[in-house]
Length: 135
Image 1 (tube, rainbow, N blue to C red):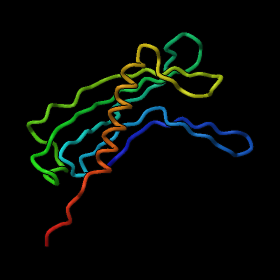
Image 2: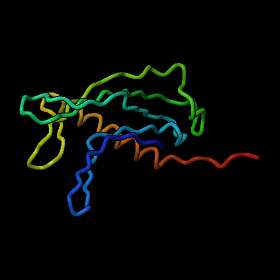
Image 3: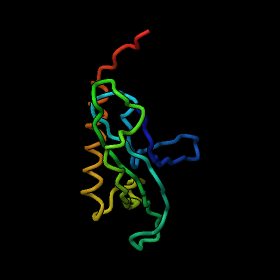
C-alpha cells in the first residue's frame, strides 16, 4: 500500500512540534487484492476561501478503483478496463482556535465520503492474502 497526504505542523519556540493530517489518499494496488482503490494528490494551494484573513487549503485529488481478474493478479498496473480516475477538489478552512484545517461546509460530505472509502480500502488491503512467489 502507498499513502500520500498533507499534514499541517506547528512549531513552538521551545522546539516542540505538533502535526495533524489534513487529508490523505491511499493506493491499494500493491496489496494484490481482488479489488483496489488508488488516489493521488494532484495539487494543494493556500488561499483565503472564507474572507477571514487566514490561509485556507484547497486540495485537488484523483481517485480510481477497479477489480483484478483474480486474487494476486496484475495488481501493480491498472486494468485497462477499469474506469479512469475521477478528479475532485476539497476545501479546508483554517480554524485558528484549534490551529487545524477542517473541511469547509461545502466540502464536508465529499471529505467524509473519501475518508470512509480510503479507510475501508486500507482495511481490505491489510486483510488481502498475498500468495508467496512461485520459483
